[in-house]
Length: 322
Ligand code: AVJ
Image (tube, rainbow, N blue to C red; front, side):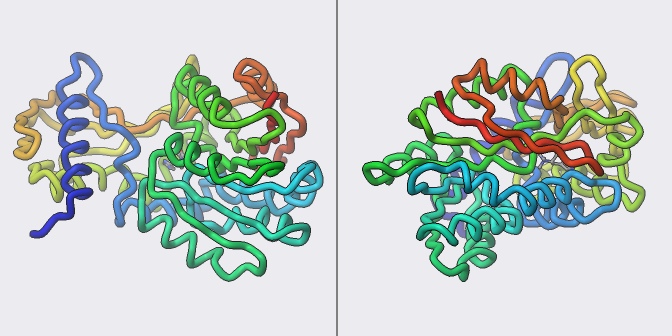
């Protein structure tokens, strides 16, 4: 197999993170960012249309219904940066609304070149919108985008899909502060957050009847098999979704159905698992609308507008940098 330098570096990161996560004393972990290889990204697209997973539809509905109001609040020519390019479907509402007023420069930022290509396909033909993707970590990409602003231009950052939910609360707060530090007063951040809702609804959203989320979770092990030569036998692992009420988050785990040892050659690792032991693979933190306001105030923004969906409690918050 031929690897580019970038792929080799990515392989090194995966091996390093797998080694660190699976040798952790106590609860073993794997970072959720590794879900999104080609198979994982396709499975996530499928999750987004599951009846149990109302999150993406709520996000899209809110953007469709509020894009005009968001754009009406932008007081100067504005360039648009997006943290994580997603499929581009939701972003379209904002770009189209803004393009009615001014030519739009849109800069999606994503570590996945495939994701950037997808958003260029989805959004590339909107009249008066030009796209330049940045294949980078969010904060590096944002710094690069901010440098491209012309005098008098403002920046609107989109952080949609409740991606912030993957950070634990302190890390999410630190992240918002760092985004703020890349911006100037009067710039804006449109932030999506999934809201707390009844436990059975939340658990079903992460443990759907068709088993798509289970496949999404297990694909992480299959990815480690593919890329690091590991020996995870997927039949010996079960998908688990649990509501952690004290930290207000849904946790996804992979649970070993029996005692077993797994080899991970490219991480120079052999790991023993007890029967019932889990690997913690993701957290999806759920917020309240007030909590987002407080979070914004503590991290250098003012929350100037907030919209929530009734059908699936979810908030869109427009934050302005102070
Ligand atoms: C893309 C991070 C918002 O946490 O709900 C969906 C990912 N995980 N089902 C989420 C996910 C399981 C999703 N985010």
